[in-house]
Image (cartoon, rainbow, N blue to C red; front, side, top):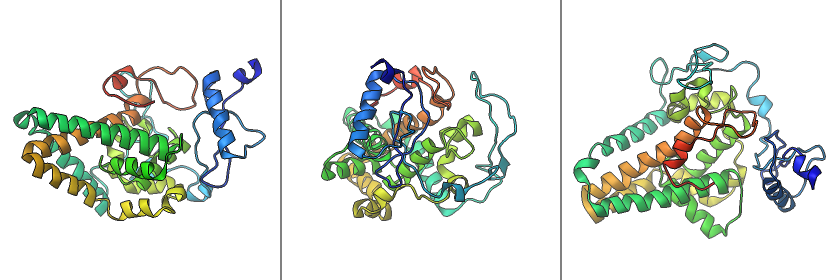
Length: 321
């Protein structure tokens, strides 16, 4: 047991989405290692040279064909020194042109318009407050943020940490689509790329490109993501399921339908609180994981990236771990 506890962590190394890639990781606790060993027994093959890692990261094929050498995206190149982020030891090595000095495509314009409109709705919150509207916002926060984003998109779909009956998996995934952070295929692909290239030149949202880029600006810079990672080829496990393709094709209709329903039930206050306040809260709670939790806080283990434990962010919300 002593030898097992001292061993480095491990993950799986397969060539299909049901198997996983070996990746260096932090020192282990026995409990984390035991969860990993259980996962190995469920998934099958393990490379004989594997190191133990608690969270599985899918092995995307042809990654070498998508990028080689230095990355240059949106008019900026990695390798410069733009100073450290305030009150942190993180040095910014690239300043992308996200808002000005680049051509916005239709997807980025639509995404930016949605994000801006949700924040504008929040300005009406003090003038439309009532307890039913507040309760609707709180309920939808739990359903779309806690169950939809954290439990479904993150733990279940991106990391495959557990299995659910298909009807329940689809229900929680639909809840996540109502958080307006993208359809499941898009969200999961970006998050898998993030873990594959965490805090490197090819990370979709690293604070190495500045705090605000890692927090929000990356969200409407699809050109940068494609230049770093290529088009999504790491979500075949979702793309082969008709449900997720349906959500992808009809994604915009579902939040609109919810907004219409809320307005019909409670008028403008329900719209402000159930859509604006709730969505913006879930936005920033999610994005703080990408920004603040890679800039400020403590590291219990040498993870090989900038991820931190940040008590302020954790105290600001109910979050599954």
